[in-house]
Amino acid sequence: MPTRRAFLFAGSTLAFGVSIGGACGYVIGVNSASSSAGAKDAELDLAAGLAPTGDPDLDELRGWALKSPIEELESHIQVFMEQVRSTYTSDQYLWHGMERLVDRVLAGQHTGWPRLCKQVLIQTIELADPAVLPKNGLRLQARLPEMKRVK
Image 1 (cartoon, rainbow, N blue to C red):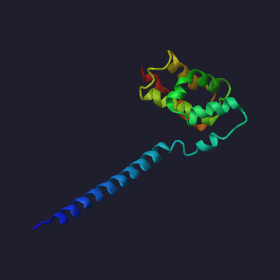
Image 2: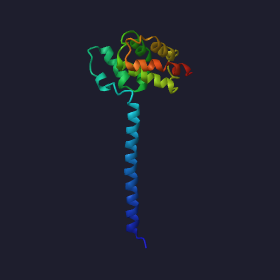
Image 3: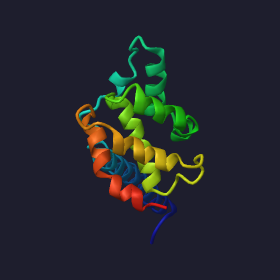
Image 4: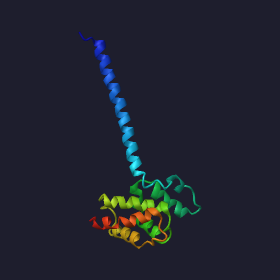
């Protein structure tokens, strides 16, 4: 005949197993997601990109590109894209920010952007000189057909 003590023991064992299993499953899921997302950043040390460069404008742009929420980067999108296009064309950390913007376009999350920003983003990538682009910039040029299909 089951006793109250046996029932409490079985219930606490179940609760313990569920909590440990959930925690382990979460860790495994996070690790697998970061390994697939981190594959494109394997050659890019984001922490090094946040180190002071001596150029306050570049430091601010890198902060937007690397550590700020995507909404903040989007709020400065016109200035950001113009600086990438004209001044800091070969900065791999800024091109990481461009990748973040491209990911927003491909996910269809660009509808709140100012008018024509998507077109300017495409033109900035398209007209960039491949001779000076970092690897992540070249990857974006390969994604141009995908971006052009997005409405």
